[in-house]
Every structure is written in C-alpha cells, then in structure tokens.
Length: 277
View 1: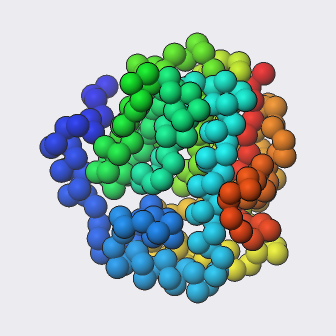
View 2: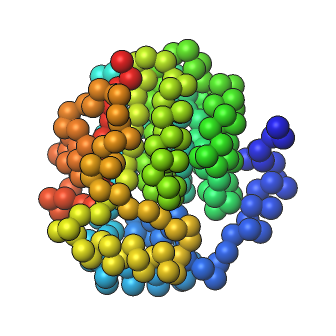
C-alpha cells in the first residue's frame, strides 16, 4: 500500500492546502472559531454564528470537549501509567494537544495522530513537536482504514503494550451505526489488555431540540456531514470495556477540575473512558 503524505513533505502539504475549500464552511474550522482560534475563514465564522443563533450554547461544546481531552489524557498518563496514545480524528492543533498533556505528565510518552482532513495536514507541524524522551507522529488517513492506521501506528507505538485510543468527535462522521461500532471494535480488539478507549460524541435528546436544529442546519450547509446518536447509543461504543467513573456523561461532567471555569450543567457532547480488561 502506498505511503500517506508525510507532514514534512512540502509537496504533500502544498497539495493538501490546494484541496482546502474556503467557500464552504468546514467543521474543523468552525470548531477552531468557537475555541477562539485563527485558523478559520469568514464563511466559517458566518456559519458558526448562525449555528450559535440556533443553539446559543453550542460553543460550549467545543470547550467542554477540549477540557475533557485534557482531563482524560492527564488521568491516563498519570494515575493509569499509559505511555502510548493513538489519537484519531485529531482536528486542528490547539492548546493542550494530546502529546502536550501526556508529555507534561510523562515526557517519554509516544503519540500518533491520525486525520484525513487536508486542513489538519496543512497545520500538522504543530502536532509533531515532542520532548526529547518521547515521540510524535502523524498519519494522513481515514478512520475507516483500520488496518492502515494500525500498521503505521506500530512504527511509533508498541502495540503489545497498553495504548490509549482517543476518538473525540470523529465517529459522528460515520453515518451507519454498525459500521461505526465495527470500526471502534476492530481498533480496540487490536490493542492489548490495559488499553483504554477515550470517546466523545454529539448526542440527541428530547430535552435538547435546539441541538437537532443546529445539526440539521450544519448538514444542509457544511462539510463533512455528521450523525447524532442517543446517550445510550454512545455508551454502546464501550461494550465489553470497564467504564471508568462516572461513565458516559456530558463531557463537562467527566471528572471536572476546579480550573475548568463555568460551563452549563450539561452539553450535548457526551464522552467516557473505558478500560480493556
């Protein structure tokens, strides 16, 4: 199978930039806009503002998901002693990326990032910084190509030792339920006992109709399209794993820290952490 484009390949990065659409809103750039970043365009800002009008709290989801990442990775690198992380659906680099959180706790941590978005590839140099003791790597690949992801990850990670599989807001882009569950199951099955799954997902609930309206607007106007699932359907991704307390909950309720600031009691982005026994 041919190699995926390397981040340090100038031609590959330039080719990725040429595929970026600036005339159509894009979920990664809108997420970046909501987080206060600068890697977005007026079309993304306009769509982000429209979504916020439909659901005023939507920007809190981006923050809640990002804080969840930091708490989950920090816990796994700290209390659980995990030293390897496979982060699929990485998104645009931001503050406190997975390698930064993990290597603050354990400088020898190794991280492999995976994303198939040309926007992320064009900015992935920021994901490849590392402590001298650790290592980071990046693969331009689709979540569905499980074998390719595992083959590439094995060059940086020892897949006979525990790995934290990080899937934040990425299986929402797999429409068919059985395909989505199957992808996660295959990834988890390839990892040894003691590995962990960290997953977050946008949810739909009867008491959050404005979320459904915001998602419908997005799917009519933006790219890529996303799929909502119920909280119970999100919990199903952890079947066969030992769920860490407090289970699958609103991301801002997963072991909140005093420095997280004020967020709503719940956001429609649910997440959890499960251990493979």
